[in-house]
Image (cartoon, rainbow, N blue to C red; front, side, top):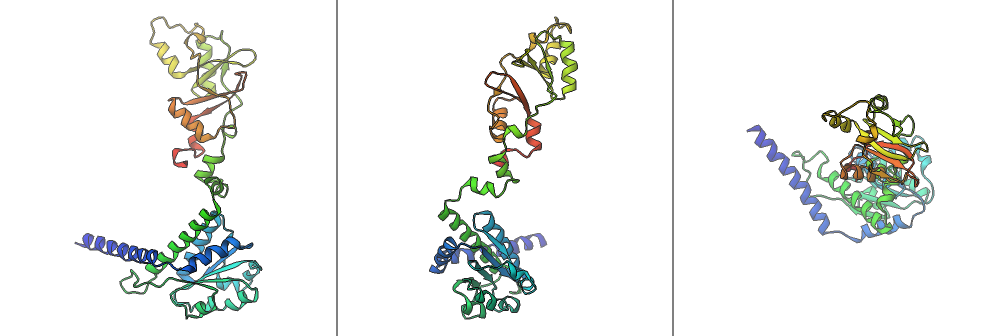
Length: 327
């Protein structure tokens, strides 16, 4: 019974918040267009500020703006009054968030923003609030009801504020023609950054590759392969031209043959047309796709003369975070 009651409560909350978002989407005004125009034209940064839950939403919005091409930061009102106001410069734009519009800590900053001549965007429920009256652009975030059964805890109001921040950031991205490559440049350590910037040149193994000449015996090859720990052996000539590849699977299959002989030349069981790539600047994600398409574990990297440069193992790609989730 309690489970059903909890699910009913969750569904009710989602519907209340979804209704608020849909209502706002149907009643947009020109204030949002003014915000877009202002932020596209500004030469400075966007400073977001707010207290409590509004501050937490502002911090998330600042992170979203910063990662999508709008230089921004979050400024806590209390910290601003104790020295952090130094980050504010002429040419910046302020986006202040307070549902009531009467946050004492936030409103104490308003004269200082005006002193710098900064345009002030306000997000509040009331245009006649202190924050609303001081704003140059007012964004109405009034709602019919909070999802909180007591009508006290910010729930629907913070969801709407956050969604509007996302919507403004997306609109700015589209207006600037912000690309996937641009996004990745701000996230070089993330999955997308790895997919767009990490090449096989930075991941492939160059040193201590397990190599033998074509006249080496299978016994000699097994010893070299075991030391290489790649599960693969490269057969090369005196100029290191790749002649073939032998995997541990090739050796196991050879063992099943009645004519198997450890003194046989390893070249006789080699794959003489192995899959290779010539471009060390190939993206690692493309190398992963190549490996999976051809159902191999290791990729030989060669130059235009087919000389062996290095090897890229599937496990290396996975350990580096190169997966299909990067796409």
